[in-house]
Length: 140
Image 1: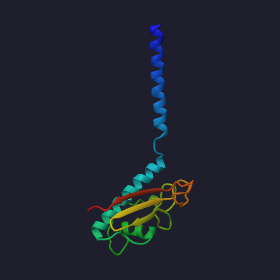
Image 2: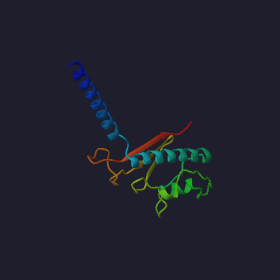
Image 3: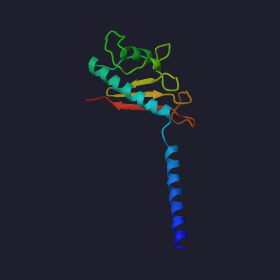
Image 4: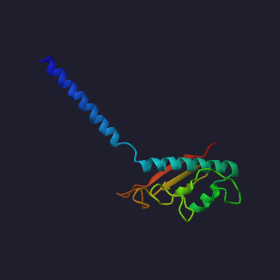
């Protein structure tokens, strides 16, 4: 009888560990989402460094911001935050799904937005909304 109880407890313990392991692995971040997070963090850091050198954020649309970070503006400040492989023929910095990022600036904050896996810019209230955002305050 004791042997049967011990075996049942071991089986339940192993089953519990397998159940937890399965739940944990299903919650791991999608590789493209992880790349977005990494790319956005690097871009934010680069934009903040640009601001420290120049005194203001780069201005304009996505290609203008890319040019500024690559040192191709009148300021000639090169910030290594953009890889050529992450750009399209128009000079736009792309998210992991191939959609150009959108950049937003306030006096003390940077936000980078991706259209996400479905490549559609959506309102945050939309049922299919999967846009991704990354933001950080400017260093003091």
